[in-house]
Image (tube, rainbow, N blue to C red; front, side):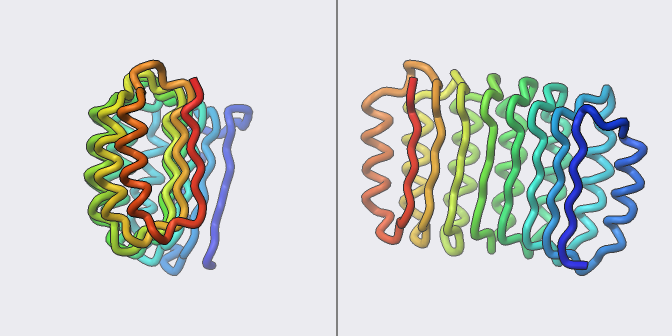
Length: 229
């Protein structure tokens, strides 16, 4: 088997026990290349399910594509992000990564810091999409860590999609750091930035810093920017 996906939402009568058994099955799929997991609105008191999944994914050395969707998982915390990050740093063959933590209201800059540290190990990553929209506790500090991680991925990275919609702690400082990182992404072809409704701390200066970086992306083919509000 090369591809595997499953979807669990908050209407399903599945808790961490069911996910544990699915995770045990995953561990046996050593040749798996693509994995997609949807835990939409999964709000159990215990997030042991994330722990089981993280352990299983570590056992997939050939994995090239990982898509993990945890939208509206309001009880997910930095602890779960830390578990996922500990797994990511072992996936040396990974080419495409998509993480969706939309409305993770308890996630903070600490979780983003752990994630950023793990990204630095993914030297062959070609595409990254991160959705932290409405993760209202995230600020410039977390984006600084992310910018540092992106700087290290300049050789292969072709596509970046960052969604930090309604993260009101973000200011011009973020775009100064991201701009510095983008200048080193010499192979970048697609860039999507969604900072919709991030408040009034994003000013002309932030756009100036970002614009200077965009001028250096000579191979860029697709650009989408959203700073409304």
